[in-house]
Length: 504
Image (cartoon, rainbow, N blue to C red; front, side, top):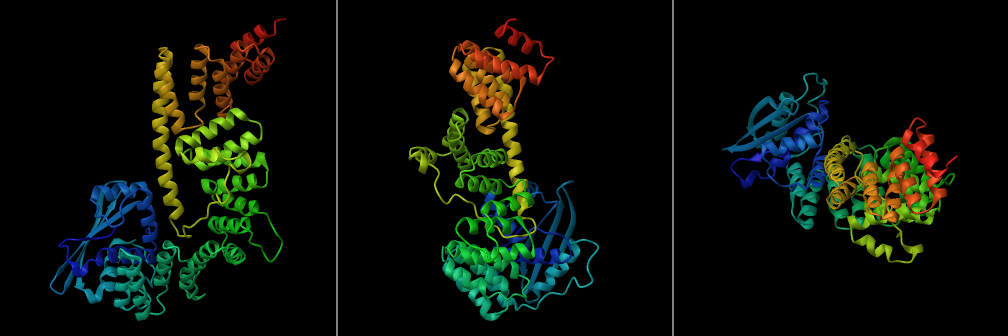
């Protein structure tokens, strides 16, 4: 974490962030696998924590837990005359105890050496022999770089970063930071120029090429973007490279060799990272665009299973289901989308052929860094676990109210459960039973169908058969009862219902 400037000394304000950057670099050189600044900022953004906030130790610990870290390093800075005092503490999250407490002193001019000593005290016991070797960087260049990262306006940030490059023209990290500023401002010509200057033998070369590919996509230079991501995927096959290769192909980029459809690249991304909902969405969306409804439905369902709050995926899935004739499931998915955002109401109002907009494919703009996917997955897993626990609470409440025949209150709790967990089969089953005993047969049939679509169960087949019977549709009732018997031949209820519908 950024270190606290104890006395709020304006002359060293930049050292709080510098401390975190230097310690991360030095710890990673020692094999400690520390989370980088980019990854930390992405985690802060996901958790809605202001990037410049001074955090309490309790908040820092909670963030560490949420991103799946094993330790959190916090610290403070203080200037005593010409001496900088650095106090760093490593806290093990598993035990909640401080494992290392380090104080280092020295003049600011020896900043790099101070933090190398601090990292040596904080880092792993087993260290590489060359652990203290690092490229010589003028301190003024590093200071300008950090100030550029912290600047509140793009103009100030660009000025500081260009100063850093003037002082040290080979400081490629500053070029990557310039890309961030230009890209955030929508100036991808300048962003592309910034990273194009990173040489092929630089430690930052792959990252620079990845960022260049993103700018080429934004500039609609799809052939060039395809070539960049193809080279990256050939050198090191990663899901991010394959996903963006599929994006470039989807948007018209052409390879020099055999032409593959976008789904080939999206499939490779999903195979390498099967839990990423964006890769599943891109696959489903690409299949939708080629009118392959079964494949589109399959992958869009996989998307919403991984992220139930994905409104776009619910809407496209609903549209695909409608096009395939599954009207009940289609209505359900579109309704879920509308609950998540009013924008999908506007989409639904368009002509059927134009309901799903172009350009929904999802670019991977996070660069291929060591912990990015781990952090995103850990945060998402925590969010989903919280959602599942809350959905389970509403389901349990709805079940009790159903048993007490408090149908209105039960339906309210069950609707809350299905909002948080759209494929909670038991919740849809109970909603169907509520409709059935209140003589809303058509609504009951729809609810039982959605329950079966979420998970095939004996109870849902029996409920649907009973609803068809009350709707005077004996053939459909017989079919569902027969399916119930096939699912569980030992079920007395299923056998009795089938006998009642089809007496011997």
